[in-house]
Image 1 (tube, rainbow, N blue to C red):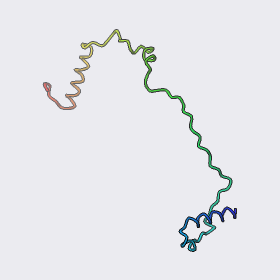
Image 2 (cartoon, rainbow, N blue to C red):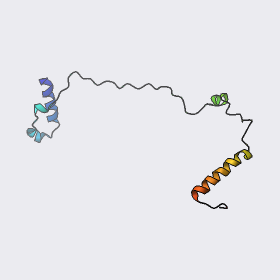
Image 3 (cartoon, one colour):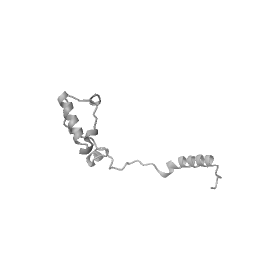
Image 4 (cartoon, rainbow, N blue to C red):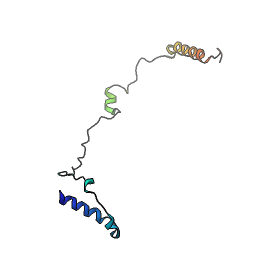
Length: 99
C-alpha cells in the first residue's frame, strides 16, 4: 500500500511545473487507494426484437382492413346527430338560429 501511495505522490508531483515542485505538499490522509479493482469491459447490450407499431401488408390484409364494408352509414342516418351537435354549439356559444 505504501508503495502505491508513493507512486501516486510521484505522479502528481511530476504533473507540476518543475520550479514549483518544491511547493507541493501532499497530505497522505487525503489519498484514498482502491485495491483489487479492475475496469469491467462494457458489455454491448443485445438488441431485442421489438414489434413495429405499424401493421405489415400481410397483417393488414389478414385483418380484412383493405376491404370496404358492405353496410356504410348513410347521410340521412347522420343528419339527426349533426342537428343535435349544431344545437349544442349554438347553445354554448350563444348564437342565433340563422347564424
